Image (cartoon, rainbow, N blue to C red; front, side, top):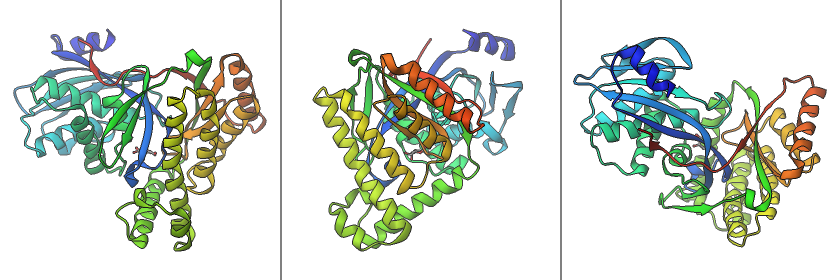
Length: 373
Ligand code: GLA
């Protein structure tokens, strides 16, 4: 394994172990996690692998095969800068919780395309959290590792994300999507075998990430919290009568509420179809989700809209943006024999606009975080 070779070269000696955590796509349930709602992501066969050894002092040394150079060496977590803040944040949260976590030597290797909205940061956090859990004998459950990783990102990195990405990375099972109730944190593995139904799920990486992504994410969260406050409910999850709620709201709060409430219903509807074995039918729900994210939640962008519309023109069953939005990736559900046509339509639509070609990744439902050696 090249991460082990790099570890030997960088630090001398063998790593104590190697761990892997995947990125994710979200099938349905977008911008619902921080509204205590429902999500249905699954792990992708791309992720982060870390080779790690514990240390007898509190120093953290960390290097990445994707960022060549000397390892970052930090006697104190406050010295962490740039991408290193994600893994170091995990140490910071664990130590803050009083867990017996000392230093470590780490080499990171990843193949989640950066900026594609496939949660490379969650994969990085969760792989390190799992490694520390094993090396320091912490005995923590996967959901606790996900929550620690989320807090690293919220409180150390400063990105106010929900729990979906870290939970998907930590808890997913191969061949299944992960249904998660983001209030109770109860989860269920939902079998998802697209190939059996002659279908493929393609990830279309637009290759763009608009600058406003992070600031707008925080604003959407704020809109949702304001709307819930106006309605006198703990979270938008608790809105049962949508028509009555919409009458009491205006502007952004009204639009965001419309999206979140209907999106939660779409998650349940999609799971109902899967349970009935009607996988072919889920495309319409993906399309409805995209339109709602575009028009009500306002987190799409021209590159995502064109990817979705061109796939549908090429004969896809359904398509939508996935993840936070403002760039990143779309997913498209396509019958096997239409994959080439869909791909051609999307490429053509980008070319017509003079945009750089997007990239396509095929995906299956991969396993969640685990130890490799
Ligand atoms: C990002 C966040 C998640 C979630 C999605 C939108 O991926 O990290 O917590 O809010 O956006 O569904």
